[in-house]
Length: 97
Image 1 (cartoon, rainbow, N blue to C red):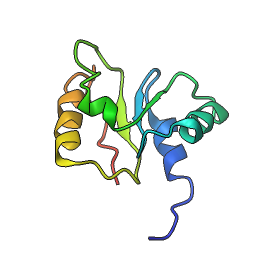
Image 2: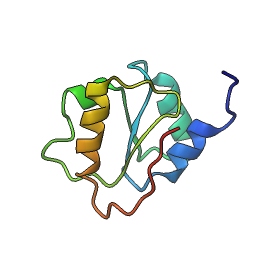
Image 3: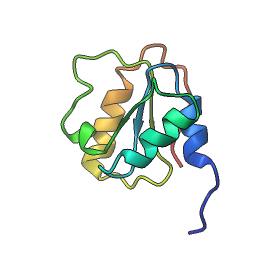
């Protein structure tokens, strides 16, 4: 699959203030650096295990998005859909590739 220039950056930039960005694995140094480098230090970068651990429970989220290269398991995808229900003002468009 050819590399899609700037897709991750676009997703991070599109998140509302304080949004959650789900990276494709648990190695988070690169996406955290990328978020900070585009002025989005407010974005919380997490790995897919954040979904499995149900870290969204009891929290009102401002926004949530998945990286375009993430390959979520069925369980992670189901948890993502549950997490989306925690997003206030859920009028945002779906952001998956």
